[in-house]
Length: 462
Image (tube, rainbow, N blue to C red; front, side, top):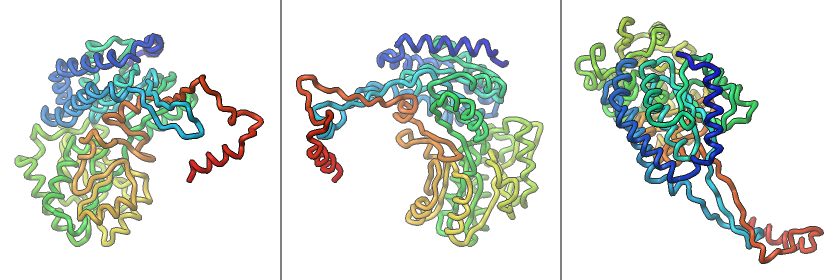
């Protein structure tokens, strides 16, 4: 059900009024809210997992590992560290500013909007909320309409845990997005497609609103001739099958060295059968496609090459078998947009320089995967760019909260996780505290001591 424009206006005004009271600035209060968040997530864990199964056929194991478990981890660290993160920091002061003292004060940005997609509808809505609460902001949350059971459950969970003047949920379609983007926020945190990111940026440009955009793109997966093919095939198959390829950092297309192409394809088939001994069609560990339009788009890609593994599908159950496509042209439709499904087009290369040219000629991807020896891996990473990368693995860079997760260029801007989530919702305010017991004259007009000042400035530059 779409939230009305009047209700959205009411929530925006309520949250602005509540933020103005200063309640959220108290670090002890923030920690209490994080603890309430953690308790609420435990209370609503089963309903959320049931809803993920209903909307996506996502098993409890996968739901916990890729959704709730990551949120629990972020909340726990924020509870432990928020006092440290929010603490005023003393910084060094140059000679030209002495005897003043210099500080950085991390203050909340204010009232925020968090928009999430359907593919990881719990993690990608609630993980940013951890940083929002820790930083001392309020939040309007907008889940995806394509996972209605999850979105309803999240709304009930949030209403049961927080007052709406602090955290509230808005539901609806693109029309509701447009209404939300019409209002002014102190930060918009959006995870979604590049096209939605552009719409949000255009709408918020009038306010010069800061934004964190976690988007997507075609993340390449390169397998070189000296890669461990068994390990590579297993980790690549796992990364592509996770959430049925409906992952913003899923390996999108394969770039195989010509010498190992056939051996890799055989290894991929074997490792896939190891992950799903009875196949994926009736497995309770294989996620289904979210909706018919996505299913039709994905099955339409099958004509862009020759199916050499998989290729079966069932529209009634929105199931598509993990599929390898050979003989794919770089200009084919399957190579133009992020696939977001269990279909793997194959390209081949002889020289890594060809891979570099291919990747850098296209939009910057959210992830980059290379299988081969470490020296070659670091060389190719140094010649390309992406939001994140893995050497001899896939997906796992998102699992470490101590490194940033975010995009670059068309795949996004800004990053988060752990302290970076706190910083994403914070403003680092510079404060200079000057004494009054002394007032040095050299800075004042008519600059009689300019020669000394110049020497001091040049000395600091050496």
